[in-house]
Image (cartoon, rainbow, N blue to C red; front, side, top):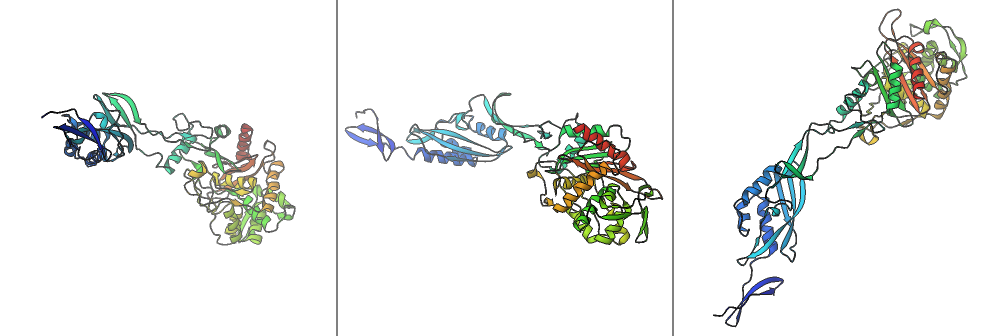
Length: 510
């Protein structure tokens, strides 16, 4: 029998070797197709059937199975799926890998399929597992220590380091408490191509978490801290951008408790901004005449002005400027009633669960029980409670014309956005913008050297018991796009203690 050379024969798009013998052409058809072989191989790989895989390999090496087991172990795989594509003319069949494990990963590879003993088989090398693999190389999932999520001030400065001021560190801890998913203990895993202990190439890099940017303005914060320097009693200062509600500064002195956001205090006469708003909305004119006796019995309880000042008959504007307790206590009962005052307080955020991105308390205005309780509430005493942040928001509402829920993080990150901005009545805003500057120009804070354009309200809030109970010193106000609140626990009168701090703060920011 005479044999002649083989020639490829094309049948239905498949190369078929032929043998010419004795003048007769014998077609020796290769079984299956490259796609079928690749599909069976990849299906076996997906189910970890290494024996089935080896039967589909032309001349499998002795370490064939250990290569695949090592690949799975090094990546800490919990599942894998491999899907084939269409074969190319050079016998390569692409595939797509989807891996689950220490780090989810997808990549594209290729199998080289050749004819062997009239069958299509995989011509295997380590590159059949991943294109970058070869002898001496491995692919590993490497978990690094926990990656710290940077916390930034508004200008991009990191504020989560140990050198940050104590009040700033308090805020950072508060942010971490509100956003635990961002600051969890999970490490970061990357997938590396290795040669021994050396990383040749990171195939999947460590995910760098997006920083969490706050609205904190370090310049404003430093001015607040400087203003409180030397204060020997617990004190806090909060500043907001009133046009947006963004928190710019939160200073607590000493540290240990974030009284600026978590402290609950009677707001004292700073609450008269709310009462005055309710009265103006009810028809009271700033120029209207009112009386301010040194003491007045309301509901069976004697109310008196600071140091029992007798201002006689004066305008409502002047009664506000001089912070007449007898005027506001009586008018709260005679002209408002508890329901009306409560509804106006709600417009200034009282009762709303504010969620600025750090833990913070809500301002409280409980339903009044009787005339004495209502008169006390009208001057910010009794059971009315608020934090410096709450009261800074009250000042900001007058400055902007709208009460806005304060926030320390981007609006889209605020955990609960159900509390919406609340526009104030235009007549109320117009009136209070004339009343609050009068406190500075001729009222209780006239002796304090405030920068021009400042508007505010002093507060001297009694707490405890006794004939002359101790008082917290308050001042809240605004200037430009800045609204703020200052409190000094047990500090005395607002005009003598908190107002000068606010003055130093504004001059430090200017």
